[in-house]
Image (cartoon, rainbow, N blue to C red; front, side):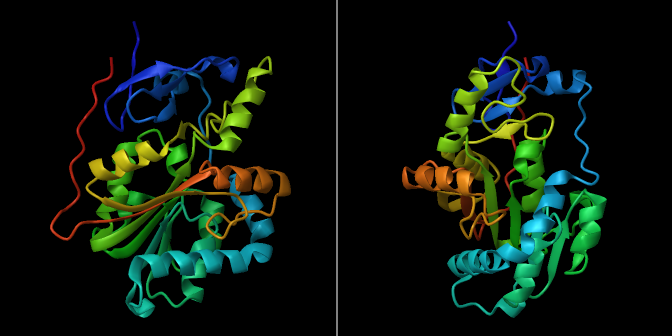
Length: 292
C-alpha cells in the first residue's frame, strides 16, 4: 500500500477524495495537517510549472497603484511588532518571492536600509530591481545577512517545503525575524472551494490547491511545527484575508467579503506568522522523512 509521508513532521498522510485534477493525488497529514499534491504524480504528469511571465505577477502590477497605502500600512504594523522603536535605517530586509518588488518598495518607503529580493520570474525580477538587488536563486543570497526575511505566499508553490524554508532561515541574522505567510487549508474560503470542486465533474483545483502551481496548503499547527523544526520560535500566528493591510493584493469584493467573515471566525484565507531565531540557537538541521 502506498502511503504519503509528510515532509513537515514525517507523519502519515491520508489520501483526500478528489475527482479530476488530471489524476493527481492529494494527501493530508494526520499529525500536523499539511496538505500536498503527490510529488511523484506531479513528476509523471508532464505539467511543469513555468514562472516566466507568471500571470499572477502581471496582475499585481495592475492593482499596485491602488493598493500602495495598504502595503505601507501592513509593513509598518509588522515591522513595529517585530522591532518596536528600533531605528529602521539599520534594518535589512529580504523578500523571498518578491514578485515585482511591491514589498521592497514598501520597505524603502518606511526607511529600511538594505532592501533585496529573490524572484525566479525574470520579467518580474527586472521590475523589482528598481528598488534593490534581486537574485534569481535563493542559494546566491549571503548567509546571516538580513534582519527580516519575508516568505509570503511562496511555500504553496515549492515541492521541497522544509528544505526551502531552511534555506530562507540561513539568510537570517542572529535574532532575525522571519515573516512567513501560507495558504490556510482550514479557511472558510478553502472550505467553500472544496465544496464547489466536489460538484464538478473534472475540477482543476481542490480547495486552494491548483496544480502544477499551488501544490501545498497548511494549518496553524503545520506552521508552528514547521517553524519549530527549522529552529525558530513562533511569536505570532494568526489569519488574515484578501484586502486587509497584511494581504493587500487586490480589492476583490467577493473574496474579500468571504475572507473577512472567515477571519472573524478565525478561519481567514492566509496564515500569517512572525517568528524569531532564538539568541543561542542556529538553524536546526531537519530530519529526513523516508518515503514509502
